[in-house]
Length: 356
Image 1 (cartoon, rainbow, N blue to C red):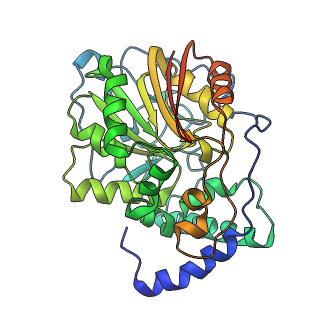
Image 2 (image 1 turned 120 degrees about the vertical axis):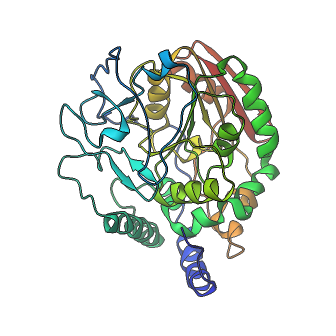
């Protein structure tokens, strides 16, 4: 994704500052919503090959042959095991369309009649900017929660590794290098296995996971098209080893049951529209004994860390995110099905370690 020009930044800052006043703190618990994948048993036949990912940069896998033969992906529409390079679901015909270096596997994009042109991606991003701007009048568009749409805007995605993420240290986050060390320690038994960086943002963690040459398959997953554009661009600039890049909905992930060995989700749970649904999907896709490592914010975060206005060096605004208590996080993890749950508190940062 090209860097925004100085003129674009100048025009965008007042807009972003104006709608930040409309953000209000959403409750940490929301009623669950129906999961489109509910009731679908995603079987795992013995033969199929998972390749990936985009026409521009196919991913390589160093996994042992027997694991490479196990299907990881599943159609978001019907749950049939699949590989992304086949272009569409062999059962229902759902399209798996490469877009800008990633494959769009969201329920909306994999509808049989879904638009396939690159212009539709830009239209979706424009819709995110519009939905976020409309919030300045106090109106939230149905199906477009602000904490989700904010990170689909190109400006915020561009800024994420240019100071935004680093500011989380003020809340107790260890910083990406230390967080990577903690992840490696927790995933110690997952060598040559399949690892997902869920809600990967601009790719801070997934690039490190791939470059470690420790895992058989690494997959970057995010809902934001512009964040995934940053992932692709930065991976190319750093000559990072290949990994899969997939756009997906955390509440309806395109993976089969019991197919993933480890999942990382850094500084993300507070942005998920329905955290219960996402955690259930994490648990569903992990193999027995699978590991889930996550970080998120706890109650009491200073305004300068999380307010949009402060992050943009503009007028301070109210928060667009949701926060948790340690006990609530433990309850949510247990409710999703995890048997082993540990929540460590570092100031206002929660480090979550779970085993299925």
